[in-house]
Length: 279
Image (cartoon, rainbow, N blue to C red; front, side, top):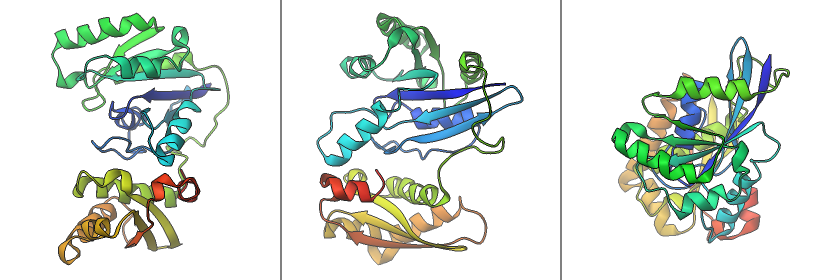
């Protein structure tokens, strides 16, 4: 039996969460086109008859301007040590540049793997150009993939599995994520909020399950200003109703999800509030 841990790291919006979901065969990380959707370390677990690979999804590395930004960067950088493989994920649709190089500067590149994601969205010539540009990093291996269509995913999984040392199962064979259920529900609500609210809100929204008495679940949505509270609720409660509908559709049948909106002024700039919210 082979078993081990693989960390995925990169800039925001390169598709790390979608890639982890694709490799695990089901949704373990929330996904959005908004930057810094992932805020905490999320583990997705793939178990086969021969191996168990634990994929560590990390927040996108960026230049932080708030306490929240500093915390999520620290979470990402802390995830590249004590693992069996590190993958730098870059976006095939955007030029390879200083942001990717900055992230790469935090890695042991001779032992790291570069993954060029979103190849479904560009031409083959563009993929080749991106691989050529990334070759300056002198990483150990390079894999062009599409987390959206699955192209190249099986080859990547096979390679990563072969890198894992002999070892035990770290999680039961039917486990696909180490996230507590309450955390998963809170993240699911935040994912749906990112889908239906305005572009200015993503950084200001946090979610937290405050009561769990199945099938009743109470989830608080925290924003930074009164004006944002109105945006989240929507006219006649329309936005909140839609978010609840979408989130419930992904929960077990019978779940009763209650959503409440709360203002916590400038929470993402206050380290104590960031910590209280689990970041």
